Length: 268
Image (cartoon, rainbow, N blue to C red):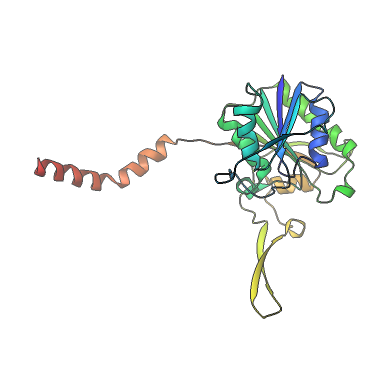
């Protein structure tokens, strides 16, 4: 099995090293990651700067590793189209330092790496950890959680057009309460702008992550389950076409279309 790994914390992040070590138990691993942190870049790609893929030799046992001066989506696109010669069987993005929950779907570079792979019909999984400080993470325990999840994922088939978003609690395998398969809770607004005064009296704004201050969640919230000590698995589907919605919206413009047809007949 050919496995592609990317992330948004940069190729030297300990999370990607931990993920790579685990995945080598299951197949041939290739790593294509940004050369530096690219958190919260969403699904952006680089248009006006040439990309360089620099071979990196820091992951023992992998079949190839490159650092790219671009975004996670750049890395996946470049990896699939150029660097790997043939498409991978699956992609894993992570392990991200900090969880990706709810609306993070639209902001996260980690999740964007998984989305980009799914556009190539490559099954994909994003993996994040509920911790923000590497010095407080025991990656040996994290790898135990990753192994169990990866083993189950690879024994099954991810549905076409779906990627899995997985969040790991920063707990040992013994203290983890299990796995909760649950949708992303889009009702929670995790990031808020905070206004501050500069020395000249002008107000500027900074995004504040209020994750640790949030307390009220719906019962079926990925936020709640992760906080309770579960591994959360959220299947995310990206549809490119909704026929029923398309037909509904098409009716909005029928009047304009009928008018244009009458104009064409009168001018004929």
